[in-house]
Length: 93
Image (spheres, rainbow, N blue to C red):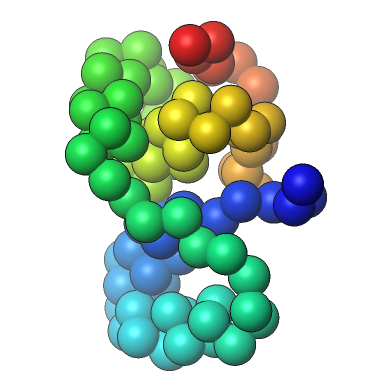
């Protein structure tokens, strides 16, 4: 089992939010030869359902996408801004 399971959503989004371009981030991730899990309809639905609870914790769409991937795959959820996540109740389903 892999030690991390990245979503396709957050990495390019964060780069673009900071004024960069997403394509180099995607190219770099592909160069690592790791599995990237596409953001799908189920993850979109879970992300949307998490909005009311996560908004008050300052979590972004990218944060919710990571949570949704964890819910979908039953893989442990986490992120670099984990201090923000510490106070957020993670979904268990």
